[in-house]
Image (tube, rainbow, N blue to C red; front, side):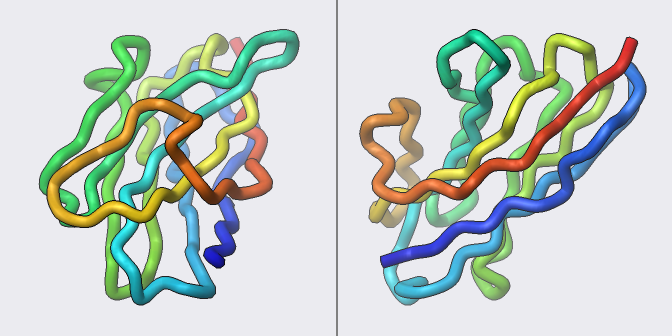
Length: 126
C-alpha cells in the first residue's frame, strides 16, 4: 500500500504561481509512475500531468502545457507540480496518483492508477 498526501494548494490571483507537493509513504521501495489530476465543481476529473519513475519522461494536458511543470525527487518520495501563469479556469481540487511502473513510462488514464491522495484545493481569482 502507498499513501499519498498533497499539499501546497491555496488561493492565488490570476497570473500567480503555486507549487503542489505530493508525499508518498508506505511501500515506497517499489517503482511508481505518478500523475496529477484535477476536478472542478460539476466537472469530471481530468488529467493534468504525468511523470515516469525515472523522471525523464513527462506529459501534459494541452490546457496546462507551457505553464505547469511536473517533477519528482525519488529520494524524498515526493512529486511536485509547479503551476505558473495561473488562470481562473485552473480552479479545482488537485489530486496526485501513483501506479506501480518503473522505467520511462508515464500513465495518462486515471483508471490505471492504483493509489490516490485526498486532494488539495487550488482557487484562482480573476
